Amino acid sequence: MNIKAKEAKGLDYLFLALSAFVGLGIEAIYAFLLEPVIYGRSMNEWNVAQSICHWVLTCITWGVITYLIVKYAHKKYNFNIFESTRRINAWQWIVTAICITIVLIGTYIDWNGSKVLHEFRGNGMPKFVFQYIYYLFETCLFTLIIVFGQKACEKWFKKANIPYGGIVVALTWGISHWATKGSLATGLFVATCGFCFGVVYLLLNRNIKWTYLILCIMFIL
Image 1 (tube, one colour):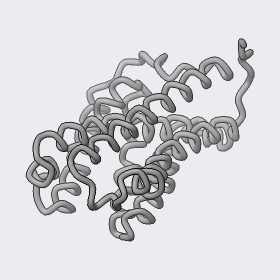
Image 2 (cartoon, rainbow, N blue to C red):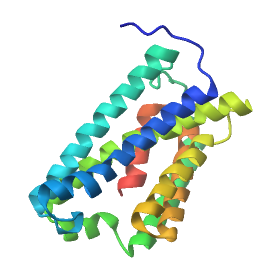
Image 3 (spheres, rainbow, N blue to C red):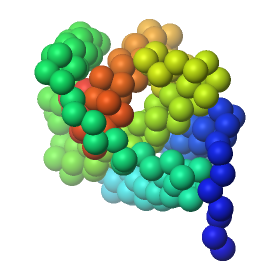
């Protein structure tokens, strides 16, 4: 069935942003409700194969959700997240590099060293590889929160140079990390990173390919 394009309102874009957020939350259903029943043990007791199965299942779910949201936005509202081709100026790259540095320094302090090395030592090669593939898919969804959160607030407030998307992802993603990790400090750190991600999206002129690549670097490293 063809979906005719229509003029999207702020609530329409907010719905898409929250859909991406809910998509992230599906992992919690797998991790805390479904898989413990299947495996007969809680998440912190899973073996290597069970952890990898969890990440594979989550990645498949997140990949499907990402595809459906992007496709729906294009068909329903004629909004193509890949259409930005504006040139990115040198000063924008410089400020982007500053944002990357701030986030990576914060991550280094938060982890008391290299996040990558800590996770490699803690997981071993098989789990490490699949966890980092999982991070790539996670980045897809919180990028969509930024994109559609930005569009929603621009519809409401009529200003395009404020990182609304970063504020939306800071609130949603930050609060969820606070709830799941049980740490306010973790929630605040994630929220701060989320805001920086939203700033980078605007600095890169909403170029989704460059944005995704830079956010992967900021988030994964």
